Length: 148
Image (cartoon, rainbow, N blue to C red; front, side):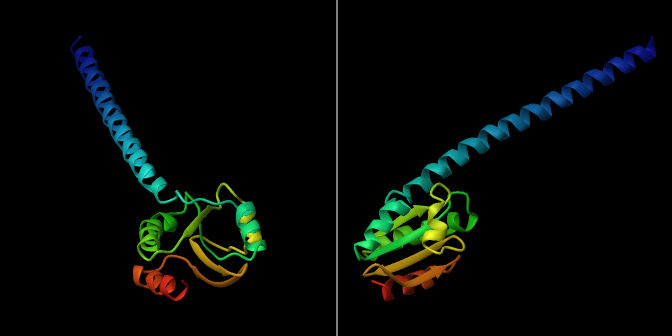
């Protein structure tokens, strides 16, 4: 009888511990989802000046000028770069379009993009400059200033 009581007590303690751990994980998961939703909202504000590969192709065929930021929403480097380059472009008066290669896969080949983030400057419909990868804010500022 004594062994049964000890066994029952151990089971109760184990089930209690499992319930406690499960509740803690659920609470953390909800917290993580809220954070990622807030972060996602913040990220979306960087991508308001969107274009598509079709629209960009038409602009370039018409020999227009354009500065285009090619990115992917799931790219960790883009997540670091966007909060730098989008406000910087606005501050410097650069009308920079953004093109999400994750949803518009035609852009990879059409514009010879090999990785993200990539910013390309076009004049008279032709590429004149590009900056690729994660760079410092100073590098982006120099690039924007020399490609106005």
